[in-house]
Image 1 (cartoon, rainbow, N blue to C red):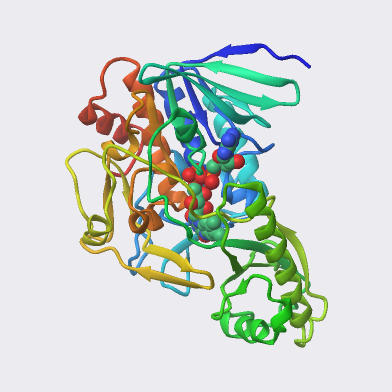
Image 2: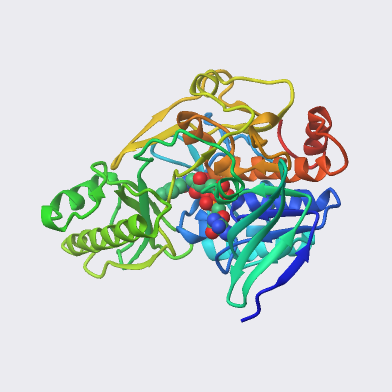
Length: 417
Ligand SMILES: Cc1cc2nc3c(=O)[nH]c(=O)nc-3n(C[C@H](O)[C@H](O)[C@H](O)COP(=O)(O)OP(=O)(O)OC[C@H]3O[C@@H](n4cnc5c(N)ncnc54)[C@H](O)[C@@H]3O)c2cc1C
């Protein structure tokens, strides 16, 4: 076992989801030498590890689809067309514009964008430790099959979703009360005849027929979210919810097993419907879809009131346009519209951690209360905050952060502000 390996970069981004990829590419475009650390063997975060097949937050909730997010996120959407049909907006039952995509195409397109951007990707690398010097992170330690690898850098971005980097660095956490928003199992169902109209009403009817003793997790009373995938006619279904802390192996194991068992109980009932006799689960994610775990403290925590009012600031780094989508009770999500112009600004202080001077926050770790978080956590917004965090980290290496200059650089990189 090889124990002592060290690498040196300007910036380390932890987490290769939407936010982490955008952070890595944005920082590299500012001239930084960047490492992107990801525990799985592919990029994409929840999109690819939890089989979440629609990008939300890219478009305002308006009559016609209009873009709220540009920059690296939009470039990624364009790249997806190289591998599968072009991404096109679809109106969801809640009247939100969503962008369905193929998860395998996303893995390939994300590889492309980071390789072309000159980002050094370290897949199968789990962050396990942080070394601090005074009020700064000096290095991170990741584990792979060879043992421990220390990566030294000048600035760091926490795009881990669960806030692992912030937690290990000693950033205080907000809103620590349990339970968290419900987690969900996303699944691909094949074998349903194209003649069958699969809508929420049908799914709710099937769910209601599942015997009580086979419902180990919660089946959504409204049937959940379903989409017929244009490329192969399979169904993408999100209809099983469970409470888990989303962090401990013990709680997550229980959640995974309960959701899988409940999904199969649902499939058994589905097969009783004419045209669905051959229905089967062909894929679930590598892991459950975890919505909420830690909230690292940022220098500004966006509030529910700010989000609902469509609050604007002088030097924003991103726009959040997705409704406040809370999952307080498993099986019963609630939605609330954003006022003003239908989006609120994310200020630069919300992507800066407290207590650690060279740590930036992106995606799900951005500073917000639980209600505002329920909106800005979606992947479209994650690309935007990631791009901002990466650019900010790189620019901070050249001096103290100047938010007006950051805004100008982001606009230059195609961001919508
Ligand atoms: C069930 C469910 C359904 C959803 N539906 C939608 C939807 O339809 N559309 C939408 O846009 N959003 C949706 N969301 C929200 C969205 O998927 C997430 O909020 C979004 O993916 C957050 O992006 P991120 O980059 O911050 O984090 P993530 O996508 O979670 O990425 C974090 C990455 O960090 C890696 N990582 C974590 N810890 C470590 C570590 N210690 N070491 C190394 N790597 C680490 C992870 O493997 C992961 O790749 C949904 C979420 C859930 C849970």
